[in-house]
Length: 185
Image (cartoon, rainbow, N blue to C red; front, side):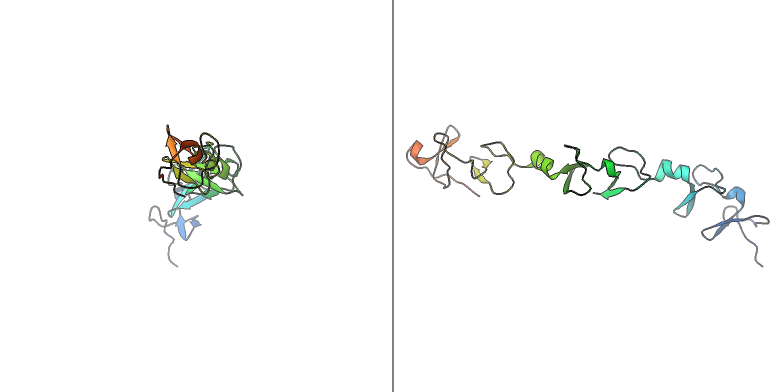
């Protein structure tokens, strides 16, 4: 019968051997690769084929929550290349949990749909609210179609025939002869 060889010291094992993952060890050589403490009957992990005690694993290798930095011991949410506690996976603006919601990520920060819209959408030059869909581009700014109106009478301007006075749009009724201006949708 072939002798059992310790995979750490390459010497024959006479008495007791500890076997793990197809390898045999003298009991005194069954140690954590990182802290060198004996593992014995304690829990351990195999990382890159090396023994790591559970204490070193938690300190150095266990996943940490991107939001709070604490160890993730239970379930983790994996999103945008990071891991999160379920309770930390929330919008940076309103703190709404995003587990079942549409979310957006910008520079590592998570946003719910409403807060993303509020923070990053183009703003209407007329009302200042975010523009989600169709916009009129005139006077080098964006407008909701309902907000592009005559500065004087408030009538909506729906064509590209309007005049500009002091940087404001005026309908032809309020400003006289048309000047060809450009509106793009």
